[in-house]
Image (cartoon, rainbow, N blue to C red; front, side, top):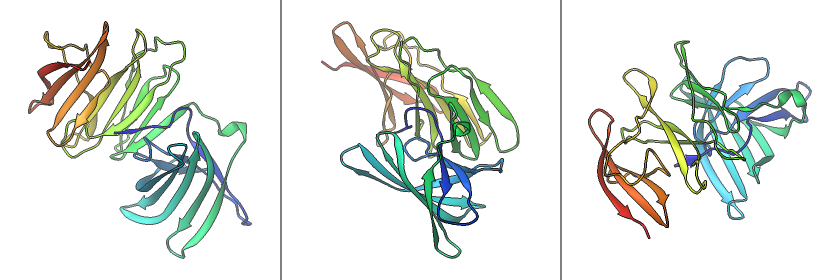
Amino acid sequence: MLFSFAGAQPVVLRSTGIRKAFQLSIYPGADGKGACVQYLGQHGFIPLKLKSRVAKGGVSKVVYVWDEVIDGKATGSYGLSMEAGSSSTAWYKRNKDNKIFKLAVATSRDTITTLDKYLLHGTLISFSHSTNKPLLFSYPDGSSKLKQLPDFDQPDPLRMGTIADYNFDGYDDVAFSIPDAGMGVYRIFSIYLYHPSSKRFEALTDPDHPKASCAGLCDVTLNQKNKLLYTSCRGGANWWKDVYRYSDHNTLIWLKSEKLN
């Protein structure tokens, strides 16, 4: 699974060394997936397809390269180096003439935003990492849907985004997680499954089996090979794991619980 950068997005960049300068905003997505770019003065968002992700110096520095995709065709590519959560270097390569533009981080206050955005299956997904602003799905047909994510119960809240195929149907879904209301040792997930037939995202109903050790969707992990979803939580001095599989109607079916320590 891929997690989003912590903190406010986007990375706002300006071209350097050319007479006719331009400005753009890159939303890096969930560790590179679901990324998009928006140019200053334009309303639309251009999807970015993750080409490579290279970690350097452990996990302190990560270099991303995306293909810019317009009408299904790669028209250019972007490179972005992130170190300690901040952008250090960036560039854009235009495919038609292979010209490379150097990009520098913009520092103007009017570029700051508290919303992050993902572009997934043509849907623009807007949310906040640190506030309780509603989650917004803006669909390609012009319609939109507001959803309310769970409130924070911790003094230093941080909402994280994840993009993964949660129901193993070949289509990426999106999830958001916050620390649990108790000791904050695990995370509570809200998962939105993408339905290709309706081209909409719908919330996955929390499992509620009487034999389950964990309530709801806690510290969710996936077993892609066996198409199983795991949840884990701490109860007393012990950690527990619940194992689920999906029914034909995207309902989680409890299989078993295991004690982890």
